[in-house]
Length: 198
Image (cartoon, rainbow, N blue to C red):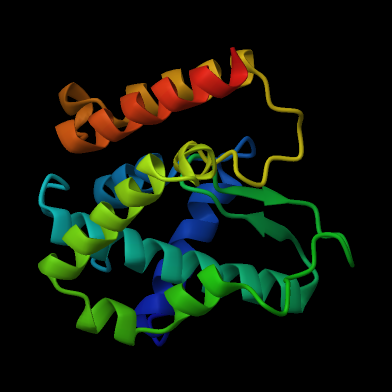
């Protein structure tokens, strides 16, 4: 690892190393914990219970992941599947694994103004907006998105949803460093999905 990399590139390299060590992939939470264990200087070493700290940590990690995905794609060396539940290095495939020209999430995370300009009030609005969608006509889509299943290639059924639910609860439980509000969101999403998939 060279020292002349900018912080985002250096964080991308650190994430690449962690992902090479975990062929089955890692959740965002696991990546953050491993970065902290290795004393990465590119993410805040503060409790994730503060919404703004959580947002900034999440943003920095996803910014670095999208930079890494672009680099791997340019090198034709691998494809990086990015989801909060599982970030995984995959074999490079031209075409189907290619980066979409219109990727709004990529655009969001690569625009550092979104990190710089987002306040705690904005984070609260983002969370409120999510719950408005959950309670409206898009509740099923929003719940699947929270579970990381909104663009799943495998058929959705209650067994798969329950498996994801257990994974999320184990990662986001307050006893494991998660937040009560996030756990409540996960439980609410599970209630909604049970109505659709029972």
